[in-house]
Image (cartoon, rainbow, N blue to C red; front, side, top):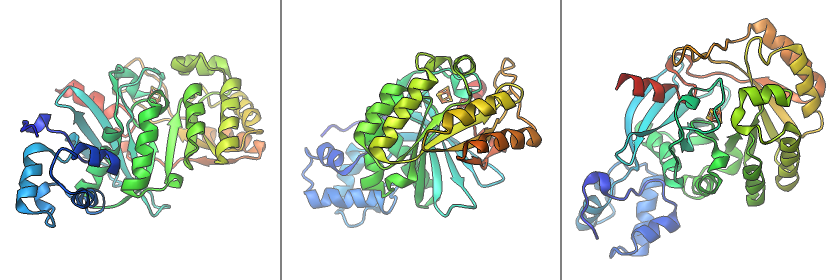
Length: 355
Ligand code: SF4
């Protein structure tokens, strides 16, 4: 076994049991010991090998010398007045960072974490802080899962709900996202019904996810009622028309029987018009879905070129009333962490500016 410096040591947190068995197969540890390590990591949130007291002292020393617990290093944590915490983690001793948000919703008993799936993002949505972070690389399944484990260890609480809505487009990293969902299911103990993957509409990824047939929720970030407006707001997905995207969603529903969520960020004077609301109502009327309206969280602090504004409460209500004529359920998302840069990419950008 190599005796590496701490940064070079392989991390164990975030690996599923088969990967953990593979990673430790060259050691002399018996399989039942490796299962004990798995339990320390996932059931007891152990933050050090010293805490794994049902292993012998020499086994703990062996692990300490050759491995580390976490694949991520916590660099920052901002705490909102409403209890939301936004974490910034660095990866592989590099200048690559990811963000994760820990949220408590009053109407939900499970605690939630919003995870990142890539460093930066290539989709380039005009209203998103992450579009200022150039795409650097996909996260591994281990790095996705370890965001949640790091937050569980930091707060000593159980997370019951995961949303793939942080930095990056999950369905441009579909293989690792699917793998991470399975680790959430089998190692972390979070069922598919408590996991949501949010996509900007990457059709091959939607089809691949349908093929995996996981009982998760798929959310489409739509943000416009027609292709012209959508292409101007989300240039990275203009190769996919709304019509083709909705056909892929229909297919996803046919395979999984899981109702789709349509996410729609309301931008004052841009996509919150009654005309756009009517187009949206027509689009969703034939899809088995519910709609989540999200009033825009301004990110003007990141760039003067982003001038989008949050619609008034009256404009939000008028838009919602028209969309409800579709017969689909329409909700307004409860926002968390407005005072701590909780939109994806904002903390990352602040860190880059101040360091
Ligand atoms: S909204 Fe999502 S898909 Fe669009 S740039 Fe931001 S992270 Fe990427």
